[in-house]
Image (tube, rainbow, N blue to C red):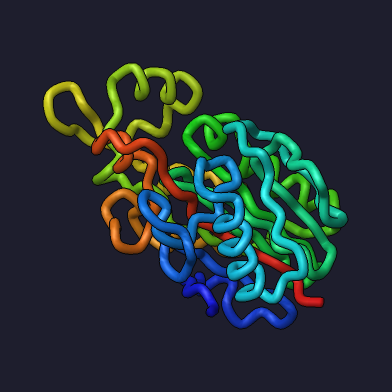
Amino acid sequence: MQAPFTTAPSLTGISGLTHGFFGRRGGVSSGDYDSLNVGEGSADSPRHIAENRARVSGAMGARWLLSCYQVHSSDVVRVTGPWTERPKADAMVSDRPELGLCVLSADCTPVLFADPDNGVIGAAHAGWKGALAGVLLRTVDAMEALGAERRNIRAAIGPTIQQASYEVGPEFRDAFLAAHPVSADLFIAGKGDRLHFDLPGFCVRQLTGAGLGEVDNLGHDTCAMEEIYFSNRRRNLRGEADYGRNASVIAISG
């Protein structure tokens, strides 16, 4: 069975490239992980996770599906082949075929990158900490080190928590604006002293400001779209024990 996935306009129709944003449908897990949980860090059955990851890999035509041990950093790794131990990082770049670069997320922002002219791809996990630390810009730098040109790089922002669902406190805004004062317009008032932050909007602003050739935003809200996506924020609101992880994948065909 092939797991369903969504594609982005900026990365569609590129010869020799596959990509997809996967949600919770089309897997074998049950309960809180129903059903396409690909998160190796979750408490789901390892056998179910392996099968789900195999379905994602098969849908992408990738020989290997590789995910980092994500730590909300700005660290980027260059992928040259499969690994036996996940590196602690939040982004990957590669120019090698058959490697499915897989970002895990459950509200944080997944971003897929490609320079189709120079055969370089990237994938980044940008929660607010990673985005603030510059993980997206460092991914672009790492792609350039492999021969990409930023004016040729296309980026696609996948399913993530959208502003309507992302409630934060004033201390969050103060910390964020201390580093990025021009981002005040990305906060809108909520109830009481609560605010709503536009994380994907911040990511779009960073990428367009970096001079990329094309940036698009899928606009899917992981927290609100319960039937389609896993969400850590929704899990916290309901007091559930654990949550599944969505997959965002890009690969160069063999």
